[in-house]
Length: 175
Image (tube, rainbow, N blue to C red):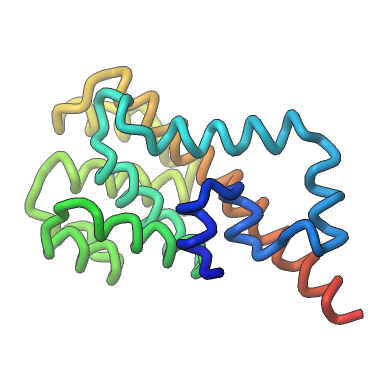
């Protein structure tokens, strides 16, 4: 079963991205704290649900894809890029994200979102008042700015969790 098929069948996002199943010893370790597993999956569903105001689902998947690319997380980048196929996204945005050329994005709002994403991923200390004001100037509401920052924080957690699980899985399989 492919990762996309696993996700479509309702499987846990982190387990799927890390490539672990109940056949791995690592699965039992990860699922020892069911509350953490459930909360992580609930966060995934919340951040990419249709019901969130302020940032479109497409914008959130673009942020997730860009965050994954900047963080050199190919499995997550691939999955978020696949999710983008379901949404209308301009070619200039897709190319700008893929080649890390945010300045080439013609849409002011999207350029501000991507710039803020890049700042928080690569230089979080630069995510200062001016960075927030730039988002407001591009038309994002205060709740949308807060949600964007929370999304990027969640993605950072997710990237580290998947990378750690993938490394542990590789060790488990090397035995």
